Amino acid sequence: MKSRLLLLFVMIIGLSASGALAAGAEKPSHSEKEATQFIKEPLERKVILKRHYLDGEVSEEIVNETILSMEDFWAKYEDWQLVDQNSDEMVFKKQENDISPLMKVNGFFGISEDGTLSIFNGRPDNHPNIIHSFFQIDLGRLDSYHQKELLKGIPILNKNHYEEVIEAYKPYSVLKSKK
Image 1 (cartoon, rainbow, N blue to C red):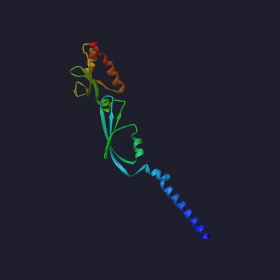
Image 2: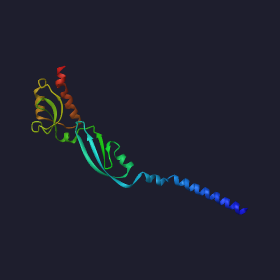
Image 3: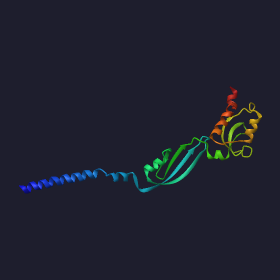
């Protein structure tokens, strides 16, 4: 009888121990949880970053990313909006509260042949390359100094200057003068 009780006791302990092991296997340890945050093999992705500027320009930068941790990857691009993705590439966009680098370097306000306030790539008298058009100006209401200034070209110095020039010429727009 003692041997049966001993055998029963050993079996109960054995079953309890195997149940504890099975329960332990179901719950990942702290180190296993950390490992799931990391990718087993680094992922290579082409990342396309599109910046949209106030002046309408869009710049595109292509970056080849090696992704070791998705958490770190998403943190890096938290200020960007994901617009497209497939197995090879991800496309992000960001609205910049500034004018484009092209405008800062070579942008000039001027007037096109039809009297429209426009932005030129270079001075309007030398480069008739219009980048962006705004509104037609009533040249009859505009004094000769401002007409000459627009014909020569007004350099775009920064975002504030860009906004100031547009606001300064809005009262001379053809739509405003007809009212």
